[in-house]
Image (cartoon, rainbow, N blue to C red):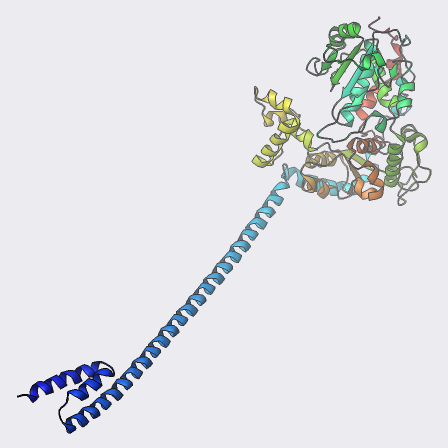
Length: 549
C-alpha cells in the first residue's frame, strides 16, 4: 500500500523528469527506496537524460532546418521578386522604346505630310498644261517676239524728264521746310522720296533730306546716304527744289508734334490730290515754318497730279536717285555674270552704273548669235510674308496658314487689324478682283502663257519667299534654270549686304532694270511715263509754282 504512492510519486516525478531537465532526475533518485530502486532510477534517469539530450539536439537541428528552409524560401522569394521587377522594368522599357519609336514615326509621318501639304498646288490642271506648253515651245523659241521691243519706234524715244525743269527757280525765301520720315521697304521709301520732292515744289518749300524709319518687317537701319548718293541727288534737283541735309538750328529744338507741325498718314488720304496738301499742310507750314510728314506711304496720287509735277517725279525717280557706289559695283557684277563675258554694255548700263561699271566682265561665255547680251529674265515675285499677310488673301494653306498670317498682321499691321474689326473681307472676292499677289506657281503659269520656253534662264529677285523652297517648287518644275543671288555671288561678296534688305533691293533693281533690252523690265510701267511721246511731253507749257510765299 505504501509503495504505490511512492511508485506513483516516483512515477509522477519520473514523468515530470521526462518533461524537464537535470535537477528533477536527482530528485527522482532520492525518491526511490532501496539500492535496486536507486540503480533503476539512475539508469532510467540516464536513459531519460540521453533521450532528452537527443531530443534537444533534434529540436535544435529541426529549428536550424526550419530556419534554413525559411531563409531559403525568403531568398527565393526575394530572388523571384527581383526577377519579376527586372522583367517588369524591361517590359516597361521596351514598351517605352516602342512608344517613343511609334511617336517618332508618327511625328516623322506628320512632318512628311505637313511638308508635302506645304507645297500648295492651286492650279494642278493648268500646271499640267503649262508643262506641255513649255516643252512644246522649246522647238519654236528661235523667233520669240518678247525678247525684243515689238514697237521699233520706241527705240527713238528720249527721256524728256531728264532736261525738264520748272519755269521758276526755287528760292530760299519760301514757305519753310518739309521733313519726311518714310516707312516701308525700299520701293515704298523711294516713292515717298519722289513724292516729297513734288510736295515741296507744290508748297514752295525747302526739302530736308528724307530719313527712313526702321521697319519691323525689313529690319534695316540704312538711311538715305547708305543707299543713294546724297550730293548727286541734291545737286541734280537744285533747279527744281531746294534740298538741305538738316533743319536750321533754330528749328531743330522744336517739338514738332506739340506745336502741331506733325502730319501722319491718318491726316492725309492715301493717294491724295495736290489740293488736299494745300488745304492741310500749307497753313501749318506758313504758321510754323516747318511740317513733318510721318510715314508718308503713298500719300500723293497719280491721276490728279499735273503734268509738270509728274515730270518732276520722273526726274527724281529715274535721274536724281543714284545708288551708292558699293551697290552699283555689286549690281554691275551680277549683271555681267548673268550675261556672260562677251556681253556688250548698253546705254542703260551707263546710266545705271556710271563709272562703277566693271571693266572686265565675269562668268562663262554665253552670248546669242548676234553677239549681243545674253538673254535672261529677271523676276521679282514679291511674295514675301508681309505682302501676303497684308493682302488678306488665302493661298491654299488652310487653317494653319490663316492663323500664321493673322498673327503676323497683329504684330506688324495693327492698324489694318483694327480696321478689320468693323468690316468683313472675302478672300474669294479679293482673288476674283485680281487683288492678290501672284504665287510662284501663278507667275510660272503666266510666263508659260506668254510663250517662254522651259530652258529660259530666270533670275529670281526679292527677299525670302513665303513658304520657302516648297512654294518655289511648281515654278522650278516649269523653269529649272532658275537662280538667286546665292547662286551667283560668293558668301564674301554677299557679306557687305547682310542684314541690309534695302541695299539688297537696290542690287536687285539693276537686275530688273537691265533685262536684256526687253520691255518686260520691272520698270516698264514707269518707263511709259518717263519715255512717253516726246511730242506729248514737250507740247505743254511749263506752269508756275502753285503756292507762292
